[in-house]
Length: 83
Image (cartoon, rainbow, N blue to C red; front, side, top):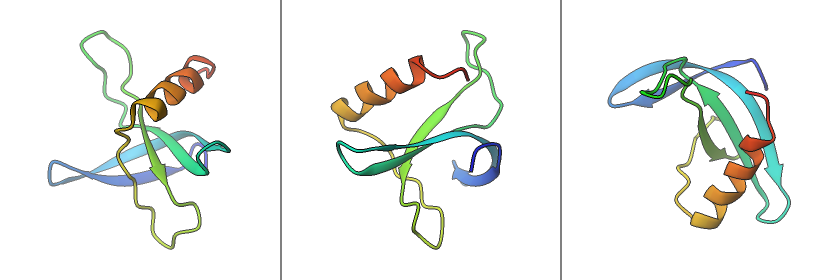
């Protein structure tokens, strides 16, 4: 799925995004997708977003991540990736 394009809805608009990576977590049995809309933050770095998703679903439905333990785990994964 890496380097594919996806479309997401953000603030009522459809935005074209590039998939950067996907990974599965054996601890919580969830799948995650990292993507970018190629925008840059105030710090000058490219904005990267991560959401959970069901890889077996017929339609890609991204879920927000709000759990602190999940956010920490994702931060550790991101620190080991070259994106």
